[in-house]
Image (cartoon, rainbow, N blue to C red; front, top):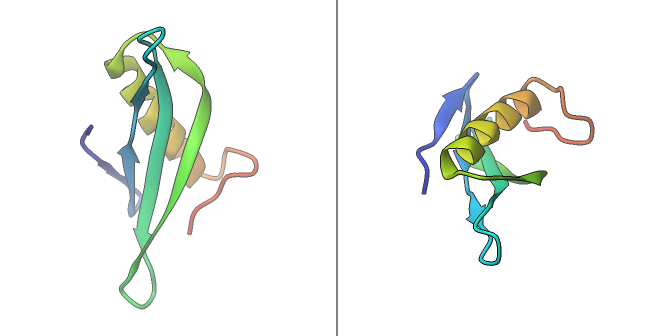
Length: 79
């Protein structure tokens, strides 16, 4: 599993999936954060699109996660 990145107090964890038929990569990620009662909450996100390499997909996961945290993805939110 690809290493998680912390961004503005949220942890973005890429959870890539390689397609067996094409070898391409799909974007899946989890974003987690601490709650007020010191628990942790998380949400799973998927973005349509396929990427040729694991590195490219990982980079896009991080960017997409940052966009979600920043409120730039309609219909997707955290916290």
